[in-house]
Length: 515
Image (cartoon, rainbow, N blue to C red; front, side, top):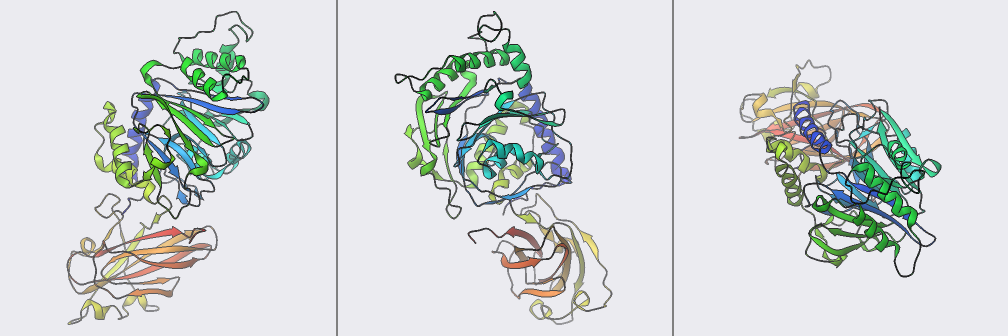
C-alpha cells in the first residue's frame, strides 16, 4: 500500500534535510547547458546533463491521470490536477521528479542548476514541487506555461535550486527563473539568445557582450567548462548555424552539445524535435544515438506505465523495448541515486521509501485526522452481532466521549489507524471513528476503506456503506462513490473487532474521465 505522499512534520524535517544537502551538492557540481535552434524547416532543443551519476529511467507518463502535488511543507496547499498530455521524461531521482522531457503536444522543458534561485513565498495559489512535470502534464505552449504562474506556484520549500529553458512545437521559447521570490521569464524580444547554462540569464547576456560577434573583441572560449563560457559558446554556435542539406539540424545540435561538453561529467546528451515529437539521445557510456517517437508511445491511462533504462543496451528506435514500470524500478532508481551520493548515506531508508512510494498513487488523499470513541461491547455478543447494534455515536442526542487518535505515516501499513493500540487490545468489540472532509466545491469522489474487521460508514449523517466481515487490513478495500458538499463533510465509521489486530485505513481517490 502506498505511503501517503503528503508528508507529516517529522518526515518533512528529514526530507528537507535531504534536499538541503542536495542543494549543497548542486552548488559545487558540474553544470548543464541547453539551447533552442530553429530554421525554416526544423526546430530542435539540445541539452547536456552534467552530473556525477549516469543511471536513470526514461518514463512514459500517462495522460488523464489524477495527481496531487508532493510537498515538503505539510501546512502548504498542494495543487491537484488531471494530466491533459502524456509525456516522455528523463528521471534520475525518482518517477514524477524528472530532470526534463517533452509531452505529446511538443512542449519541451529542461532544468539546470542555478544557485541564485529563490522561490516565491506562500500565497493563495496551490503549490507544486515538481514544477516541470506539472507543466508537461497540463500545457501545450510556452504561453500557457507563462500564464500558469497566476494559478500555481513552485513551493517555497523547494531547495533544489534550478531554472528552466523551454520551447513548444510552434518554436516559441522562454527561460523561467525564480529570483528573489519573483517569477522571471524571458521570451520573444527579451530572449535574444535561446540558450541557458548555470547563471542568471541577464548576467549571461551581459557577459556575452564581451565576445566577438556580440559587441566585444574577446575570442569565443571554446574548451572552457565555466557556465558563462558555455553560454557564449552555445550562443556562437546558434549564430553561426546555416541550413544545409549536407548537415541536418539534429546533427548540428549534437555537434553544438559536443562543443560545450564537460568531459566525463556530461552523462546525457539529448536532442528534442518538438515538431515531430521525437527524442534523440546519447549517453556517456554509449555514443550511438537512441530514438523515441512520442507518436508511438502508449499514453493510455488504462495500460501500465512504460519505462526503459537510460543506459539500455538497445540503440536505434527504442519504442518496442519499453517495459512495464513497477515500484521496484523506482525503488532501485531512488535508492541508487541516494546511496551513490556520499553525503546522503546517513538518510534513513524509511524516509527514502516515502519518495519511492509517491508515484504509485499521487492523487490519493489519506484521511489522517481522526477522533475515536469506544470501545463498545455487550456480554456474550460476538463482533458480527455488535455490527448492527446502535451504540452512542449512532444514537441521536447521545453523549459520546471522543478523543483524538493519530495515524502512522511510516507504519507497515501507512496511515494505519491502530485501534488495538488506542484501546489496549481486547476482543469482540466495536469502536467509532469520525473525521471532517473539506471540499472546495460540490463533487463526487471514490472512498476506499481498508478495515480489520467489519466496517459501517455514514456521510453527513446518512448511511452509505456496511460490510459485516472478518478480515485483515491487507485485504482489498471497500470502494464506493460518495458525493461531497461544498465545505465540511462529516465521515463516521464503525469498525468491529474479533481477535488479533484491529484498525482501518481510509483514503479518497478522484474520479477520472476513463472511470
